[in-house]
Image (cartoon, rainbow, N blue to C red):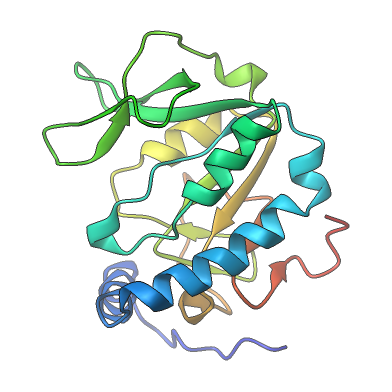
Length: 199
């Protein structure tokens, strides 16, 4: 299954705008359908089976992010350690919080659900990061919202990273800078990148 070179000469901001426009046209049922397919791929993967400490995320529903709730609940049912990100109040980095109850959440100043608690986890013990993204490419480059939270996280990370993405937002190539950190894998509802991943 090939990916068309949809981006042409678009800039990062143009690709972000296009991805947001695509997402805004999705209804709740379509988000759920695509998220379910992606979740099944993740949960059946060797990548997931081999991981004990997994950094996931809580989807921003208004942004129609890939819904990870099914994955997050399964992580807990499987007896693995679920870690969720929280924006640090005093700096521009993410705190990593061990979470055992998905009802223990609060909305931060940006109206984003974050975990309650102070069981902080060091990035070095994380085996797998599930990364939200607006767009990506076949070279495993990721385009987020432009704040750099995950770039700073991935810079210190030695485990496996896996981006969860709508297939419509996967490009042959997107602009990438020297400070952008490529992922190890990207999963969409139609494919796994790289295709011969052995996941």
